[in-house]
Image (cartoon, rainbow, N blue to C red; front, side, top):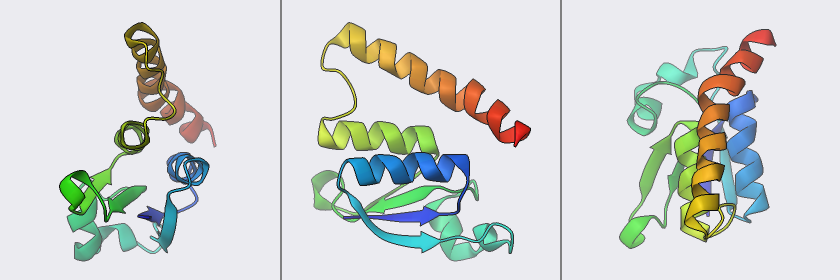
Length: 115
């Protein structure tokens, strides 16, 4: 299972939904960004940009733990790890990745600012 470092933000929900949908959601560790917990040195080792979400896959590449931060990187990692959520066709895969990066870099931040 995968440990999720979470606070109820739009990006936090993206990772939570993907993990739940893929059946990989394990331990959830809240990081209270209102109390500044994202600056804790232990959390910064997992997410050096001091943002949620972040994950630790305790069964990462070669069976070794791996920490991943940034919602887009987490979503891509989960899709590649499971072979789900991304089309197999290279053209369709590229189309899906374009929409993922559009959402992460454009749509997500604008909606976040609006709310």
